[in-house]
Amino acid sequence: MRITALLIIVFVSQLATARVDTLLLRAQGLYNEGNYEAARELFLQTENDDDWVMKRKLELAWYTTRFDEMYQLSKQLDSYRNEGIRLHYLLRYYAVKKDYDKAFEILTELLESRHKPPRAAIRTDTAFDRLKKMPQWDSIWKRDHYKSYDIKVAMAKRELEVQNYDLALTLLDELIDDRSYREMPWFYRSRLLFEQGFTKSALDDIDRAIEEEDDEAAFYALRAKILHKLGRERKALKSIIRAVEIDPYQPDYYLTAIEVSGTLEKFQQGQAFAERYLTAYPEKSEALYHYAFMVYQNGSCMKALPYINRAIAKASYNPELYYLRAQIYLSCKVYAQAEKDYAMCMDFWPQKADLYYGRGICRYHTGNRQGSCRDLQKALDLGALEADKKIGEWCR
Image (cartoon, rainbow, N blue to C red; front, side, top):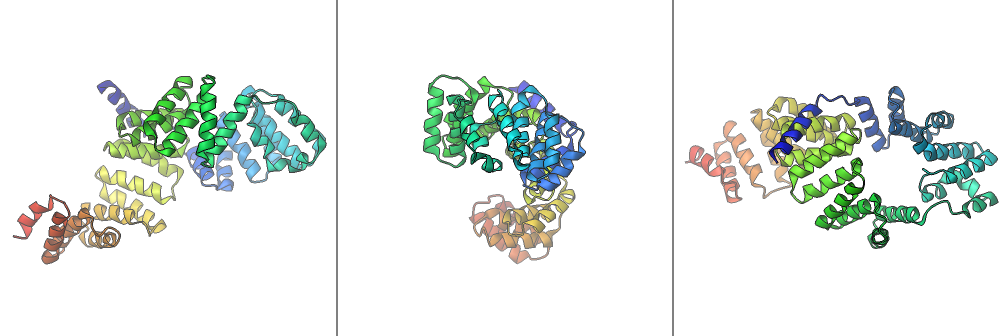
């Protein structure tokens, strides 16, 4: 246990200095937010030619209707495992260009390839609406291009995404019962069980998925969420670190890492994760809040203040932000401003003891002794036992 904990500390302490392409991380954040034009511009600036980067460039060329660029990029995606993706985008290109003979030629080649996209991804693609009205389309699809297993997995995934849990569970149970022992049914059923609140069963299934495939970042990320929900924080941290190690360019993994680190009060590690999350989403109030919180917990109240102020400027309706700023101001001994933020939070949480305790301290230091004692007594009545000492020192 102590060796494992030490390894986690060493890994996370190195995280802040480990080389991650911040441009790619920001580009992926823009992509996740649906800002495809800006994401494309950043992806095109990188010299990274990893498969996932090339796929993202292809996707963004399609989303931004740069079809000739998409065609050129598809020619560069030449590995065997990416054959299906390459052909899918070439099919889109010829469909958009209305070269239907070439499109059907590519469609035939695509369906005969081993690593092709799911059946529904092609049949429901609106780029092929004109092709679907032609007799060649039905003729090509009469052949069995997909195994029943793959079709059922895709159906289960689709039903899970629309929260049709009963049908999704039926399909996944059937897939697992036929003893195919592949990883995806276990992963999807784990997701379903977790979303439905069956956390321990979800953990059993994700562990089985990882037994089948131990190099999939999404599996470890889900496992971390499940363990976090179960209160098994050290194992959750180990799992999310593994996810980040496999895929450091998925910003949402860092959010889970932030939450787990905060629960464990590992604020230095949490700040490293929060910095990555903020790199991906520099204008997102949630990212600014988490970074401010970690910086504050590490003892730098003045450094935290600009970030929490930016967060409030973007989400002025969120009382959690004012509560954190009140604590930051109090730590920095800016008592008058802290008092205002505590008072604002009381409109949302009139029975929160910490608010009265914090404001009581502020009022004492701004010379309002009567108001301070009243707040401290209220805090004590609401359960803040530490207020009793202050009352003894200041009010008796």
